[in-house]
Length: 72
Image (cartoon, rainbow, N blue to C red; front, side, top):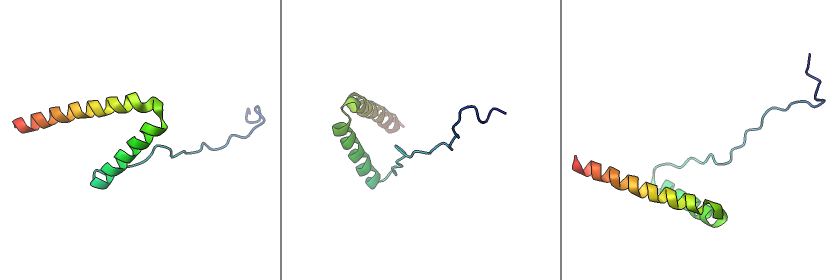
């Protein structure tokens, strides 16, 4: 009944694949991750505080997990 109100046909939603990069947990994945961080550091200046915070939080969590694992 109301299909023709807009005068335009609705197209199917497009699927965009930006940011869907899967990185394996291997040495090659580590190199790819470091490369993505370096690219983001130079290309997206607004992301620098986020990158620094993520690295800092990762170091803290890593040390806590290593400390807990060594106590067992």
